[in-house]
Image (cartoon, rainbow, N blue to C red; front, top):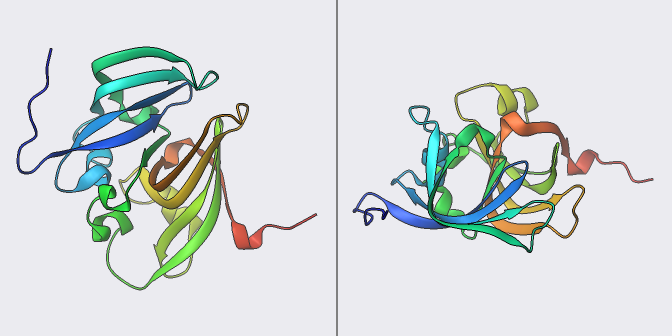
Length: 180
C-alpha cells in the first residue's frame, strides 16, 4: 500500500503523537490550515500517520512496530508534538482569533503525562473557556516539555504541541505555584 503524493494544498509534517499507551513518530498530511486545522476538523474523527514508528510509553526506547501507514482515532490522542511553531498553521487559527495576546506559562496534568509550556490567550486567562467552550479539542502549547509521569525516561521538548483538552485532568498557572 502507498499513499498519494501531497498536492499544493497539503504537505507532510513530522510529528510525535502520544496516546495513553503509545508514542507514534511519523509524518502527517496536513491541509493549508496546518496541524491545528487537521486535528480540530470536526468532520473527520481519524488521521493517517505515514512512516509510523511505534513504541510503548513504558518502554520508550524499544521500537515495537513500523508501518507504512497507520490510522488513529483523534479523540484517543493526548498530544501532538512538532519541531516548528509554523507547523501548527496560521497563527489566527492556532490562537482562535486576533487580538492582544498574553502568554501564560502553565503546567498541564493528564493521567499519563505532565506538560509544561506557554498558552497564548487573548486577554485574561479563563480556564472554563479554554477547557469547555467551542468545538476545538486540541489546544496549542508553545515551548512545551512533556514527561510521562511513571516513566521519566520519556521526555519530549517541542516548540509547538497540541494538547487534547478532553484528556486534561488539571491545569495550573506557573505564576500561582507555591514553593515549599
